[in-house]
Image 1 (cartoon, rainbow over the protein chains, first blue to last red):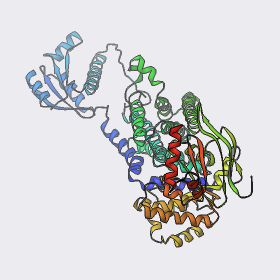
Image 2: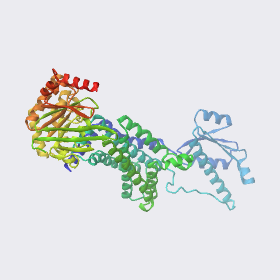
Image 3: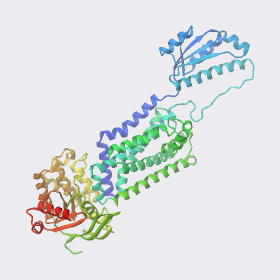
Image 4: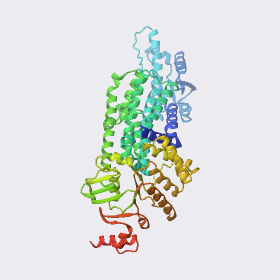
Length: 367
Length: 246
């Protein structure tokens, strides 16, 4: 036990002495989550919208004031013709424009419908789509109210977004960033730290020492397991306090889930350290083999359902996918083990597979 | 095994698939002896050392190190030997003291003992200030001395020195040999590999490996007489030439 403690002491000295390691371990996660938090925004906030009102009646005025009252939209200007709209778009003054046909209210009363055109700046397709649905929804709502007041039975659709009522993007990126950070940092740092020992030749000395190989591996991985847990907790806390991401499920389930994911990442780090001969190679494998799939194929940013079939199959071997499903279930839906045991099992299975391969490769190298 | 022999190797064979790295090695090393283990690169030295250190299992034969069997008691062997590699293998981002405490710690030396021995070492090498310096700031010669002191800090019975003087200037090498003599006086056996033939002369006995076999063994004087050579360099060249004729 004392031997192992001596080893752990040394590992922590390595970590705390190296400015770069400390930055990667603690500064980058915080920056990453804050940057993601303030940059990735799927919700619309104060999008600038212009109006071209050929009718200028009570009804159009009511619709415009309803739009203006909405949080997401800000009516910034009124125009007299289409060319003014065009120059407003070119000058980047507005993201969308609404055009009312002449005699809007009269047509609406007479024919029970009237035309409203939405012109959108689709150079940002996401925003254009969102604005389109907001404006459509608000004006449709208004039209329905009018019809209802005229005592006509009407069907109005009111979508309700379960588990993320306001479509806050933080609900998406906080779990995603957590998966990304835990995966990359844990696997990257642990593999680099093992490969470094091989590179400088101290691994040889460690193997000749009475330390058992398992003690060496545990001693190398344990510090990163501890620091990753600290990271996981910090991310959850930042997500909760800064971005309002709820923690509906049990914090203990959340911790166990995170720990299993960290174990998986560590076993991947071990596997990488077995393959890589230099720190650069280890870094390269971690970056391209782990970072990109975790970002693109885990369902973090792009929905897996929308991917080409081949990539959908590929996503089955991306560990972060399972972590994300389970993490969202616990955090956003408040579910427990009964609902995430399959994902946990897959993660544990992957962990034992990676450890198995590592041990086998390690034995072959020794004999 | 006889009382005096600290290493005893009989009919040692190590095969990797079809390749025979160690082909029927026989030798023994006496207690408190400096045994030079020579040979060209690829002759099978490294494999033999790995077996003696308990890192590799022999394919067949009898190997006994410090009283323990290389097949069954590899962990006991590891506890009773020291090892220093050509890289000096200290952690550059730790201080001299931290390096010593770490290596002593993984060899299971008690904290109080570490403290006393560390003080003795500081006195002996006059490193009162140096001990708190980072290893990366030390000159090569000092790194080498510290690495050797680390390798024998837990007072092993045998210390394996794998090309411990490569890349070091002749004066520093000479000083390093003084450290080895001192350790041997304290009862430690030194098993050393080297590429410098002048160093071979400092050994009590040497063996020369060629192509997985031990081709020559004896004291430097015996070998020089046997091969009718002026110095060890000559012996080595003649052995290599004999190899070419065959």
